[in-house]
Image 1 (cartoon, rainbow, N blue to C red):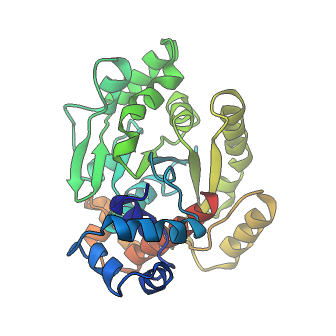
Image 2 (cartoon, rainbow, N blue to C red; image 1 turned 180 degrees about the horizontal axis):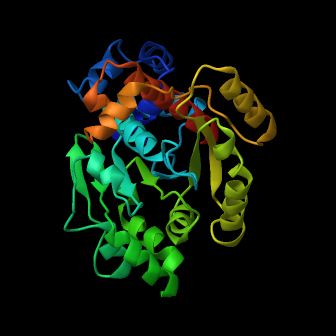
Length: 318
C-alpha cells in the first residue's frame, strides 16, 4: 500500500520524475503532488491508489526504502578524503530531506570534531562493548545525526578482537534503528583493521575515496581483496558502489592515473570529482563541515553534485 511518506521518499530519490507527468498519468488534479511536497496538503487514499501503478512503472515497490542503506566510506590510506566525504555527502543528503546517521568509526574522532562533538561522554566504543548500551545518536542539524567517537575506540578495538562475535557487534547495534533512517554512512579508519571489517560486515555497500596519486593507487588491489574476503566470508550482500576521486588537481599526472584506474577496475568510477581546493583545508582547520564553512564555495558544490550523481546511481542499484 502506497503511503504519502513513501511517495515523498521515492520522489526525493528520483528527481528526474516530474510531478506534472505523474499527475497527468494518474489523472489527479494539477498541483496536487507539488502541494504535498511543499507540506500544504495531504494526499487522499483515492490519490494514493491512483498513483501506485504509475509509480510502480517507474520502479517503486513498498519494500524499496523500508530500511536504511548502510554505506562504509573506506580506504586504508589516510588523507584521502574519507571524513570530508562522509560529512559532506551526509549533509548534502540531509538537505534533500533524507534522514541520515553518520557513524564515526575512526579512533581519531575527526568526523565528530568536524561536527562539533569533542570528547563525547557517550560514544560508539561503549555500545560495541556493552550489549545493554545502544548506539549513541546526537542530532547535529535537521535530518542529520551522529554516533560519535574518540581515542577510546582504539582500546575497544583491541577488546573486540578478543570478543565473541566482535565482527557482528556494529551490525547488531544498527539493526533496531535501520527503519528510522534513510542512509547510514560509516567513516572508517585508515587501515584494514577490525573496525573496518566490522563496518563492511554491517554495510550494504562500500564507497572508496581515492587520491589520484601512485602512493594511494598502489594499495587499491589490497583494499579490493579485503572487500572480497568480507563478502565471501561474512557479508554476501556487500557490494562496491564505486570510486570517487578526491583532491584532484588539473595536471597530466592525475589525468593519467585516473584513466588507468577507470580502465582497470570492474565497477563504477563516479564522474563527479572532488577537486583539490583550499576551502577544504580551511574548513578542516576550523573543524567545520564544508557547507557550513562556505555554502556557496566550489568545494561545497563539488559534494552537492556528487550527491546528485550518487542518488541517481542508487536508483540503478535498487
